[in-house]
Each structure stands twice: as structure tokens, then as C-alpha cells.
Amino acid sequence: MTQNLSGALHALAHAHLPSDAAEQWLGLLRPGIRLAGAGGDDAVVGQLGGEPRLPADVEWPVWEGFGPLSFVASVDCAALPADALDIPFPTSGTLAFFHFDGQLDDGDALVDVGDPETWDGARVVHVPAGVPVTERATPAGLDPYPHVPLAARVILTVAEPTHPQIQRVVAPEGELLEEYEHPLCSAEFADALLDYDDAAGHQLGGTPQSVQGPVELEVARAALGPGTDWHDPRLGDEMDQWVQLAQFESDDTADMMWGDTGCLYWLIRPADLAELRFERALFTWQCY
Image: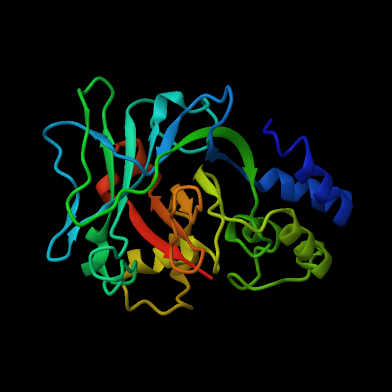
């Protein structure tokens, strides 16, 4: 049982919903791993910023025609809480996340999940366990972000009532991403959720904590084709095919600002995750 289920989130649901609705909603939420700055005796599981540790034969990721990507974060998969997630997250090796952050062109070129020609502007690098690595210096023209060691804790990730993982069970006949008649859609419960935690946070797995609507919808549309209508009935099923790999929000300590206090997201299909096919992950970002 995760920390939030036995604590504040459980209390919130029962304070603002009928008991049966509260238990149903809590039972549909998914575990995630929240990452935050390590302190004291916290076990370090990764880092924001600083310099990545890469094998000698792995080149620094570059967006052809634009330049090298900035190193955002890395996680030591073996150091994470074991069996915490409901996706086939790797149990060994390191994942390093890179993003073209606009340092080289004053933000002119944006990585847009709706434009496949920009997808090389974000990358996930998996370094298998046991492969020798060394700290790699940041390429000229880029300033590395300040190094922030990260600790991990298991949480239960919040999903809004209109999120498909909730809606398909509670209101299967409802229109995708639209409110429906149910206590979950009450203004009281919506306000309570917002008051509970309105920050996206740094997170592995779980339901993406979106800034501007379901992240899975943007990725599903990109996977079906950039010209796909936002009301295409295939979107709901395609959203189900993607799970969150990681998200990293704007962070003052690491001097990271994604747009206007936004968040970076990487999603992947579970089969690709199980096969460590991280080149198939899709990236998107949202800001206020």
C-alpha cells in the first residue's frame, strides 16, 4: 500500500465523496515514484542537472541541424523502490534524459510532439548495468544545470475524474474527456483535488500530472498521425497504449524553467519499455 493511499489522499476522498465512490476512485489510481531533492540520510537514486555519466562509445545526443541537447536528469534504476510501479520499468542500469532547451537559439526551435521532424530534440539514453561510464562534459555553448541529487518515495498518483482510466470504469458510456453525472465530477471534489497538490512534480511511472490536459491525448494523436482530428474516436484506445516513463517539472533549485513553470514528459508503450526500446518513447511538454 502506498503512502498516500493510507494517508492524506484517502482522507480527502472520503471527506468529499460518498464512501463507495471514494473507494472506487482510490482503487483506480496508479502508483508512481515521486522524485525530490535528497537531504540528510535520504538514499540518492538520481540527479537533476550536473553532468551525465555515459559510456565512451555513446555520443552526446544531438538534434541534427540544431545542436546538442541539454542534460536534464538521470535515475539509477536499481536504486529505485523495488516493484513499486505497475509498468515494466527497468530494474537495472541508468536512464538519462536530454532535451533541446533553447540555450543555443533563444528558444526559436521547439520540440513538438505534433511535428515528427522535431522529435530528435528530446532523447532517453539507457546505459545497461555493468557498462563502464565516465562523467561527460557538457558541450560548448551549453551551460549545465546545477546538480541536484534526487531521492525517491512511492506515491499514489492522482487522476482527474475525466481521465480515461477513471472514466472508462465509472462512466463507460460518457464522451471521452468530458464531465459526466457522478459525485467525482462535483465542484467540491474538483476543488479539493486542486488544493491537495497543484504541482506536477518530478515523477516516474504513474498517471502523468498534467499542466494543460491529459498528456496521453497529445501523445496518442501524434502516434496516430499529426493530422488526426482531436475528436477522432480512435484516440481513447490509443491513449491506453501509452504509459508514462518520466516527467520533470520546472525546478528553482536546478535552475530549470520549461516555458512558464511547465513540465517535460516522456511516454512509451509498455512492450517497448519491457524491451528497453527507449528510442520509441515520445516526448511532450506543457506549461501554464
